[in-house]
Length: 107
Image (cartoon, rainbow, N blue to C red):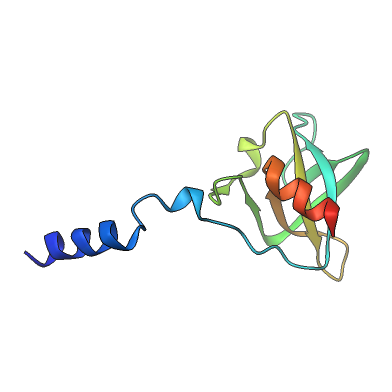
């Protein structure tokens, strides 16, 4: 009974399909680059543009649907927003949607 009530509240509040309303807040200290899957690079190395970077310990890769990815799930090529730690390693990598890319380029 409580579950039915909760589902009804969600439907009335319009949170049933939150994908259309979802907008990620990306950190301000990142850089835009093109990440390429490169099978010749072992974990934790990642190719962004023409440079090879190390994925920091605890570094996270997030896809366009805000799901965490592992190194092996990187697409062949994608535009990403990359946040580096103080050692120059990749701390966070967000694969961007076209809307996010446009928003970042505008600011």
